[in-house]
Image 1 (cartoon, helix red, strand yellow):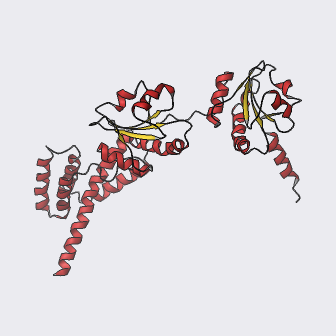
Image 2 (tube, rainbow, N blue to C red; image 1 turned 180 degrees about the vertical axis):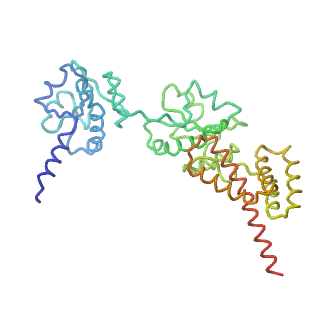
Image 3 (cartoon, rainbow, N blue to C red; image 1 turned 90 degrees about the vertical axis):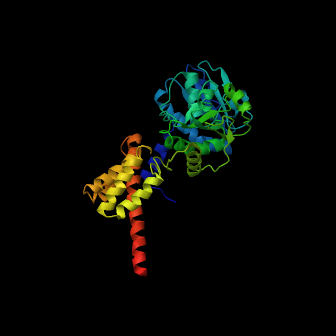
Length: 371
């Protein structure tokens, strides 16, 4: 197979672009221990774990490419031209990673092999920072031995707590979903979605106290009972949202915001169904009934009253026009969460009038057709 010159040039450039310093037994001592610290991977080309680490290691070298004059990210084929170097430093398995200080003193690297763990180690040992953008702050409330009781055991709060470990694969898979749920319930001051690193030694007493023997373990601490309930539900976003709505008395929607029932009051829904299908005189009577009820009803009852007032005063098209306007605002979602919640409640209450009116008109039409 023939390749064009531009293709070959591109291929050569991409290979040459690697920021990992390749060493062998002859070049090792001329680079390592000569004034710059280094992380060195001793690998074998046939090793599956080495192949898995390779792209991460390239990313690590890229992350420190701006400080090549201060720290080295290197690799040695310890089963090939670097076999003598590997033997010198006691390499018996692959990949083996070792940290060398500026004078060449070495120690094994024994932390995680993900990019964040590797970068954090290099930063700690060398004092130089990577160019990796820090992750956004977590949406979950992070707990530890010092803050756990003040939040999870607060009698004014319902708290869902995930006990996790940084190295746990199931925990890593759960995290994106759990973060979404935490963001959804952020506006609820008494319904908290929290996490604790149960594998951290300082939190070990809490793990023992609550019988945490595997990860992730999820427990719910309700306002009424601080003896936690084991969460046995599914682990989809919808499962968590449904569980918290039921146990916190909230009305949150999957994906954020409020659901279609938020703000609705059954007694006022019944009045709304009568109101929109009634004549002018009957509407005035229903409006007065609703006015009397608002004194003992929730704050959202005033939204029902406002809709009725608009219609009674001659704005027959108000409901449909306002519903359309609010729907457009909610679709853009460019307002503060609290404002969006307020608008969603108004939209829900408007829908109580249009939904119920449609049901009533349909029943009247059926009744007339049967005459």
